[in-house]
Amino acid sequence: MSSEGCGTVAGFAAIDELSSLFTTHYTSSSAITGTWSASSVSWTGQVTGTMDGSTFNGTLAFAGTTTSQTVCTGNATVTGAATQTTLTLTSNAGVVGPSCPAALPVGIQISLHR
Image 1 (cartoon, helix red, strand yellow):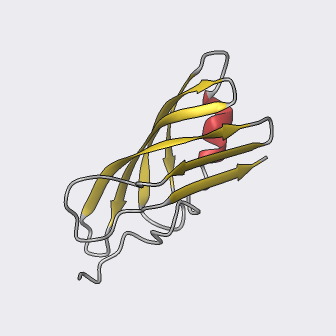
Image 2 (tube, one colour):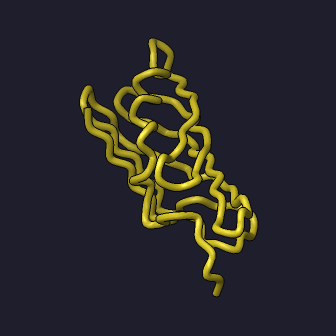
Image 3 (cartoon, one colour):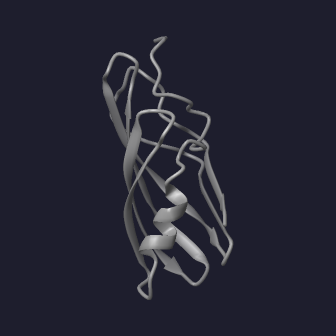
């Protein structure tokens, strides 16, 4: 087992910028696209998906840099509910990607409140 890490892999609590993403990119269209980054760890990515009423379905692309500067990548299928003040996204499988010296995030739950 490697001692490398991509930061905190218990979830995506470090994704501070994701809340503004949904505010900024969700207009009259049901399509949502944008980028995100984490301020406390070296994580970045894109989010794409659609809103159908109050339900979001999409993909969260992930790129995280390990302590040895290896970039690990993958995608997580996310689903969830949105209201005027909250957004909750989950992915039981988490980020799935090619072999990496560090664990990719699993059991993702993103809860945003306005």
